Length: 198
Image (cartoon, rainbow, N blue to C red):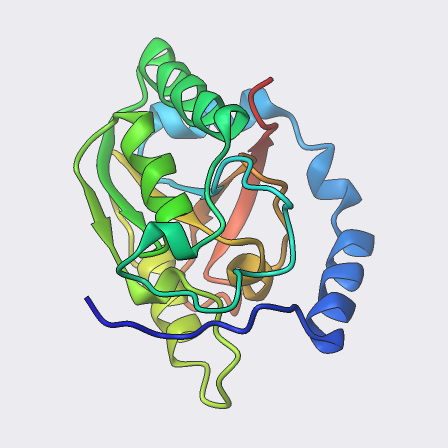
């Protein structure tokens, strides 16, 4: 795998973006989880999941981060592993058909997807935060969402800063369910949210 460095601190700009997102998302947070589950059971939707609990929660990864070595990363704790298992169990209990599950290549996202146990987990660089001027990964993410047709659900396991360009913010282990919308600048319409498993 490719070794790379990710900044170990979230800069002022990133914190400002998070603050703005927190201010604009209360209406989304109030969306009925029943609508989210109904959309997932129906199929043809996208479940965007932020990885499970990984202390301290924000602040990026430690200095010396490498993609090929989970020991150099911020990882799931026991709560985060339990959240991932509970989310997968909820998908199975409700009869959600998962056709594809794609994760960020960072270990806390991969482990979340694997512990959900709803299918084989692929990785995509499009699910990493993108601070580059061209925002190529953001465009790839939006294409992934807007072009999904099902028949089942596409599950994307990612990071807080990755989903900002889609117009919402997620807590650790929270899920937003999107209806794909080609041509929409945010790639999809949020139909509901599912709170992190307790």
